[in-house]
Image 1 (cartoon, rainbow, N blue to C red):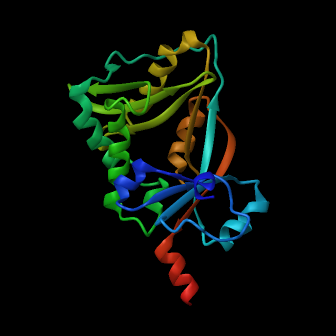
Image 2 (image 1 turned 180 degrees about the horizontal axis):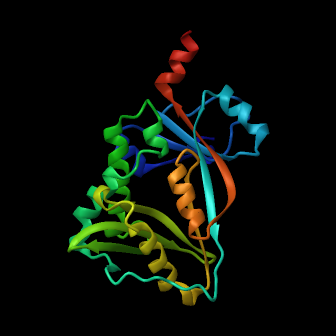
Length: 239
């Protein structure tokens, strides 16, 4: 039963130093029967009312509301290209990891009070590092200003779309059009593929939401992100 309902997350387990699983389907017996799990997460549609009470009864908490955006392919879109944007190479890895470590505060791990900010910061740093290991992502672009790395964008391509998997801008380069240039350069690179672009962000990240809307993205799906922690679940039962 455990193998069918739970999927072991090796990457998150290594970062958080505990046994992490993704809940693939909600148990019918209304109990967590994975004795190995220290931390379990799952995602549900915001419209999936039937399962929300089940998850609450299982001891899950809503940590985040994830908003998905899509930008339909446009034939006649005029791109404002930045000549300082290029494909990342192995020498960029350390600087990209530094930006990734310091760029995200609205994500689900930072919102979860049971997870330290140090571990949450490390998660994004190791996420983007997986590109250099050949584990995640199909393309990684960087932007430079005065010979310093200002930002990056990690992209995944599948049969239907281009996914903006992660985008980060160094603190002193924000509000300077770096993120916009990275995305527009991505539009240009993949224009011959005639594919839509998708990206996800958090509903609490108003700046990010407005940023994508200005670039022609429209919302098309909302999901609840749920977390369960074994030690919190035990405390709840003992009350």
